[in-house]
Structure formats: structure tokens, C-alpha cells
Image 1 (tube, rainbow over the protein chains, first blue to last red):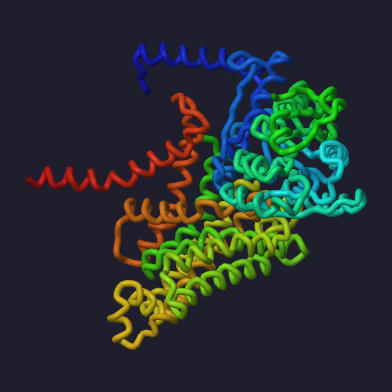
Image 2 (cartoon, chains in turn orange, yellow):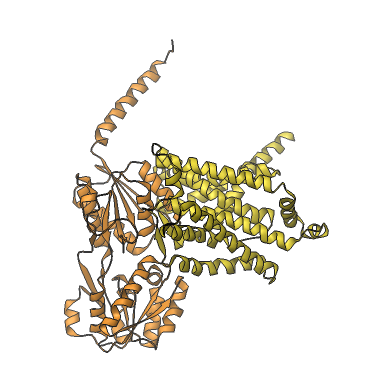
Length: 324
Length: 296
């Protein structure tokens, strides 16, 4: 017969005790695994927002919440591996920030609930079959902006506008979606779109310069390249007196006149509330994908002066935040 | 590490072992520093995804993706052989051009394949789980590719390609058309990479324009890790080492992803991977030193 020393026996029983104890608490601990394609101010804010909402609902890290976060650091191969790891960890809810990470999660599991966020067009990305409740394991929040409201804002700031310039990365799905929608929509308003491609962040300045003098205003969406190099755009706007209008509120602090945009922290919180509903037992397939609940208007008065624009009183009154 | 992340690392490692085999052919056999790979990998993904999304048979789509990759390699080689553009520069030119070409091919930056049939969904029997079935299929694909390469590089033509790489002047003296051999070698190399891109798009839910970033780095790392684990001069062992290197590299990343218990965070991932690869690379050196000290 196999003889075990007493000490070993003791430690073994201690181990079983410890294991059963941890299993008892494990029943109440929920795990949420979040992955993003890359570190980026907007995407990081969304992540923090998700945690805000979880905390608010009483899920606390180290108590009843296991929170995991991984960034693929720009590499799709790594994104795929992170997806596999999280699925293997059997997280209760998986959250994919931005299109490629959300796709990797959805491709990896049909069982574990997947919540996407900061995806502009979840239907085209085949994350959900439509904007109705999917009936699958997938739901989430889109950061799509109603372009009518954006055009309204542009007209309010530059009333005599005829040509709208846009700097964007032709390699970013979200930006291309906006450009295509603009091409359909602008002629209805008697406006024209002039595009300038910036496939790398260093191209943003030259793309903006190519537009200066040809357009009445430069509008930008939440394009990652443009947002990363917004200072370069701001310099061109100031030097050539071309008004700049952005779609993310952070860019207003960095030199845009105005932006009516999604607050990504807020978007994250909205996403987090969906995660909480799923943790509390709701099926992801019965929750319809959402768009951002509240848009925020940021105005930069100094930038307006530099870029030769006179702001109306009404606009200033409506602003969520005014930067001087 | 869970079974899921184990099989995931195996599957992605095997897909990238096709890239590593391609890089091995260009960098090691032909001695052609080829960065086309960063463009031909997403090109394979783009062609595969577009064809499948338009309703084509996934096998035919994958074949077309492989051919597209091979054509990219041929163009890089032509730039070098006939237009006398320096090898590295020729491949960089092709890599930049492919970014725009890939966007043209796809029409937009992202083509999802989540709902479409793929070679994996067709080949995989119902009763087998996805995460086990896909690596098994990949083992078969990689084994076939490896054995085919081993056999090919033992033929007259294969040997001529190897001779072109190791001593072009001598090869020419023996009557080898070195220009043609470079073109052929680059076609095989980038064809493998295109195949890998198409398979990657089919396992990861779609092709994305950003999927090529860093492919050459991963391919080279796999080749070098493989060579240090399994040093050899025989082609059979060399290709085996390269495949092994690609898989081991993925397990390093999986290990780095599971290193949160020692206080490492998400942003440390690339650093941890680099440290693990460095350790793998210096182990043979330490072994050598140890052996030398013993013999003294």
C-alpha cells in the first residue's frame, strides 16, 4: 500500500478544504473579460466606462467580480489568441472593443455572451444579423453618429458652406462607412464632399494641406489616424484659416472648433449596463443592439477665433463644455 | 492555460508556420530579404474573403488566394531581377503597393466571414468541436506543405533554387538561370504566405486591412526560434524546425497572456513575448559555453 507521510496528508486535506472554500465563493464571482485591438484614448475610456457601470451595479473587483483586460497591441494574430484565452477561461461575459476584436470573439464562440462596443456598423461586420435583438449570443453598443445632426452642426458654424473636406484613413472600416454615407447624403443638402486620404498618421498634415483653400470646412470622424495626429490638423486649420469640426469631444481640446460626439466613457457605461443585465440572467439575444444615448457638444472659442469663425450665441448656450 | 487557449495557440501557430516556411524560403534559401509578406498575407486574406463572400467554393477561393500571393512574390522578384532594384527596396515597394491593392480587392477595409462557409466548416465533422477540429485540419495542411517542400527542394529545380541562394556565381557557372530561380522561389514563398492569409481570415471571422501588420517580424522570429531549438543543415529538419518555431512562438504569447498572476499587465504583452523569445535564442549559446567549460 502507498504510504503518505502525515505532513503530506495534512496539507492535502488543507488543500481540499481551501479548494472547497474557494469553490463556494466561486459560485458568486462573475467574470468579465474585455479585449481591445489597440490602446487608444477613446477605446480606453470605453473600457473604463464598462468598469464604472459594473461597480455601480455592485460588482466589485476582488469581491464578486473577476475583471480581465487584454489589448492585442495592434496585432490581429494576438487578438485571435486573446479571444481563445478568454473563451477558454469561460468568462461569463466577453466584451470586444472595436470591430476586429469583436469579430474574433464572435468567430470563437456561439455560447458565451459577447457584447461589442465602439463598433460603427455591427450589421456590416456580421456581428448581428440586424439592428433587432439577434437571438444569438451577441449584442452591444454602436458608436455610429447620425450624420444629419453632424451636417446641421457644420451649417450652424459655417453657414455659407458649399464644400466639406474630410481627412480619413481609407483602411479604417468606420471611416469608410461615414464617407460613403456622406456621399449619398450631402447632395440632398446642396453640399459636396472632398476627400483626402491619410493611410498613416504622418500623412494627416499633407492630406489637410491638400484640402486647404479648396474647401470651406474640414470635418473629421473618429478616424484613429486623424485623432492620433489631430495637432497636425489643428496647425493646418489655424495657418490657413480653415474651420475644423471633429466628431470626438477630445479633439476640441486639441484644436477643433466644435464636435457633437459620443462620449466614450459614457458609451462604455452604456455597454457596462448591458453586461450587468446579462450577468443578472438576461439573454444577450433578447437585447437589441443600441446606439449612443446622449451626444455631447464641445466648443473651443480660441480655435474659432484662430480659424476665422464667429460663433452664435445659441450654439454657446447649447454646449456641454466650452473651452477658452 | 486552458485547452481552449492551448488549441488556439496551436491553430494560429500552425497557420503562421506557413508564413514562416515562406520566410524561410526567401530569407534563408534564396537569401532574399523579402518584406512583401506584410502585404501578401492580407492579400491572401482579402482574395479568400471576397471570393467566399461572393458565394465561391471556399477551396477554390483559398486556391485563388494562394495564386494571388504567388503573383505578388513574382512581381517583387521581377522588380529585382529585371529592373535591378535592390532586393529589400523592391519588396518594400511591393509591400506599400499591396496596401492599396488590398483595399481595392476588398472594396472596404473589413470583410466578415462569420456567417459564411469556410474550408474548416466544410471539412470538419459535426461531432468534433471547432477548437479541436481546426488545429487538426491545420496539422494536415502544414504536414502536406512541409513534405511537398522537402521533396521539391531535393529535385534538380529545387536544388538550383538553393544553389542560387548560397552562391549565385557558382550557380550561374553551372548553367542555372538564377533570375528565373529567384522568381520561382519568391512565387513559392509568397504563395505559402497568401495561403496562410486566406486560412487565417477563415478562422478569425474575416479579413481586415490591418491583418498584415508585423507578419514579417512573426515569420522571422519563428524561423530564428526554430533554428535555435533544432539546429540542422538538412532540409527535412530545417522545415520541421521552422514549423516548430512558429508554434513555439504562439505558445510564448499564450504564456505571456497568462502571466497576469505575477503582476504583469496587458501593456506588458509584447515585452514578455520578446523576453521569452530572447531566452529561447540564448539557451543554445549557454549550452555551448557550458560544454566548453566542461571540456577545459
